[in-house]
Length: 191
Image 1 (cartoon, rainbow, N blue to C red):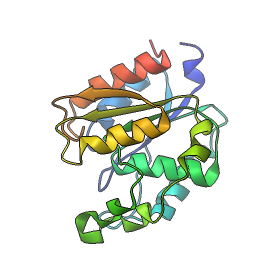
Image 2: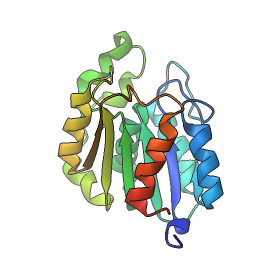
Image 3: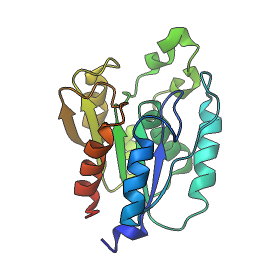
C-alpha cells in the first residue's frame, strides 16, 4: 500500500468523454478514499479531437509529478497512451488499456474519417514502446461494438495480461468502475 501511494495514476478518457462521464466519478471517489494520487484531465476537441492537443494536455499533467506513472486509458484514450509513450518515452509502472484499439491505421476511418483520423496516421513501433512499461494490462469485452479482436490483438503485441468479459460492452457504463478498480487493485496491489 505505501509503495502504491507513490504512484500517479493518469486516466485518459475516450472520444467525446470527460472526467464527469462514464465511470470516472465513481473511480475517483474510491481512489480518493484510498489516498491514491490520480488525475483525470479533460481532453480538448469534443467530436473533433487532435492527437497533438491530447498529448500536450497529458504531458502537462505528467510534468507536475515526480512519482512513478500509471496510465489508464479507455477507448480512444488507449491509443493516446501508446502515442504518448512513443513521443515522450517515459518509464512507467503500468499501462491499463480498457476497450482498446488495435495498432491499425484503418481505425482513422471510423465516423467517416471525421472523428479522430490523426490518432491513427501511422502504426506505432510496438517493439520500441513495449520496454517503457513494467506491465501492460488490457480489459476488453466480447460484446464490445468496437471489436473485441482489436483488444486481443494489441494485448498480444504488448504481451499484456488480458482480462476478457462477456457483458461489459464498451466499458462506458458507470457500474464498470468497480470492475476496473478491482483489476487496478489486483495488478497494482492497491489494497
